[in-house]
Length: 331
Image 1 (cartoon, rainbow, N blue to C red):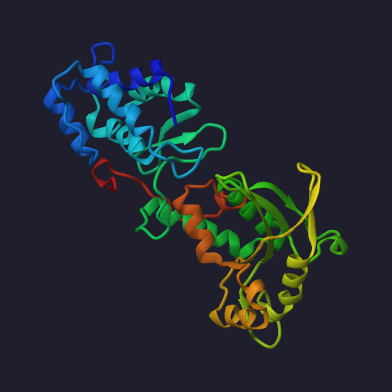
Image 2 (image 1 turned 180 degrees about the vertical axis):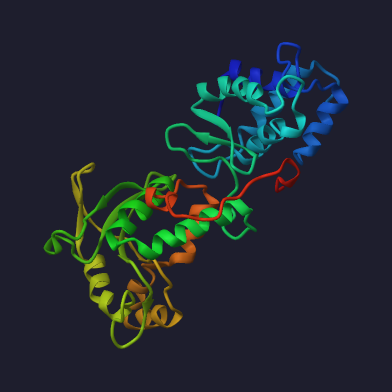
């Protein structure tokens, strides 16, 4: 990744705190070194002109491979987060709104924007795709606000229909994760469904394309002898999985038909271990390697970790409000 020289120089000036950028802390040579130490980066200022030296360091950080084409390299994003720490607020800009506006000038020229999240921490996201530039840990401890968002989504999954699960939860999530040409078959015409509710494709960095089908169920997926309530029996989707893997999809972008490479079995509830084992035992080895499972817990973790916008119905679910005190910010 490469930024235009004028944009990178502006950010470097903010890091060192030139007089033209009064909303940022002034840093002499030793404090520049200390700043990068706070970023856990081993850069020591060599006593040369502060701005060109810092600009060269930032340019080097941008050469790191990003996790996603729409994300900043991790070390560069850490520098920006450290720079925008609310503890570094200057007189006249206690909430750092003016510093944020200044930093967003060069960032927006490059297609990114900075913002403060509900946890009062600084983030950078890609303007077009809303992809957030940060390492994603699906299993980290949650903040109180993230717990609340998780509870809202749980309440929504409990009451939503199967079509709402697909249209309002799964499709936005897979679009955010970088899948392309996402096509929802729907349930209006069962004759055309061929065992899949959604098909989509994912382009690898090598430009190769992999096609995916999704079979979604609203409730719990188990191996009981019969379907009970909202629970779905795994045997009921066995034939649907075979149809999904055996039927071609037509990609209008390439004007070609292609087989689905992998199948997602997604449940708005739990997918029991017995159900996974049963399906694995009845599929042959090649088919077994094509199947991936995604249950409620995985969906919740993805939504929280990636800070995805909740479905409209989940935003309206009642829950106890949470408030922040200045001394209660989680780090």
